[in-house]
Length: 256
Ligand code: PEP
Image 1: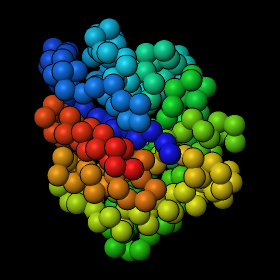
Image 2: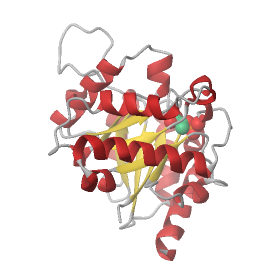
Image 3: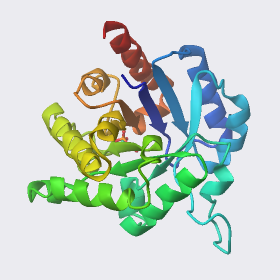
């Protein structure tokens, strides 16, 4: 069984000192656990100081984004290669990057490849909009996003990838996806991976769920067949909620 991954995406929240206080509080509440991994995704600015502060037995760091070119004249960007040895994960294709910043499937494919090339595990985010779901396009969208996101990933590299199913309509909205909707989307993602890399990698790859996860619903989501963890936005900014979500994962591993 895979380690459960609980990931906290802080988005564009918390300045350096606020980020440090949150880590301090989380550090008091979250313990080292063999079967549960906790990853924090702060702003780029807080990354370096937090890398000195975090207890690495308890936390891993992840970046919310990064440029796929290693270096060059790209004003304002931080490259994924600059994050090497600083972060363990990088989010790629988050719906806010796709929909607000217009990131294309092609760019996302390059970012996934840049992460793998730099020994960072990409968390490839995929998910349909509300309109796409009502038009019964969910499977097609997932297929397109998974295929394009993994375009440059070889069969030897697929083990480094994590996929997060994040329906756009459930992100930051409080709209709660039903467990059967999640189970079916996760099965579609795994079958796409199976088609590309074979059945064994499709079973091994970690698939997370993200979209308005909070302490009340985390346990139910973690119990869904095929879900190996959660990607948490809003609720990860509150130490009480986030440590409760991590606590749900601890309890689940004890009962398994
Ligand atoms: C996210 O940022 O990936 C996310 C799922 O946000 P929220 O939990 O706030 O919906």
